[in-house]
Amino acid sequence: QVQLVESGGGLVQAGGSLRLSCAASGRTFSSYTMNWFRQAPRKDSEFVASITWSGGTTSYSDSVKGRFTISRDTAKNMVYLQMNSLKPEDTAVYYCNADPMNKFWPNYWGRGTQVTVSS
Image (tube, rainbow, N blue to C red):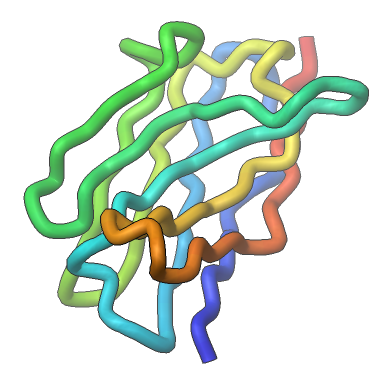
């Protein structure tokens, strides 16, 4: 059974930092791109960052570029999102996503972790 389990969310003051983790299990992800998305109340889901499992190529949304860093540990099957200089507008539920390069393969989602940034 494939699982993506997020952790590390919480309440932090503006300017603070959090590190989110995504534990991936149940299959090999070498042909996947691992993404972080977020959804704030009454807003659409928003892409945050991505990393290719095999090559480690990263991409970021403009809203987090320079403040957030995505990384992965292939030996531990973990994906991380280091979030620095947090702003109240970063408040959202953050979701880990595994997107296959082969679009006939399944796409996986975690259940999310809440991040709240107080001003």
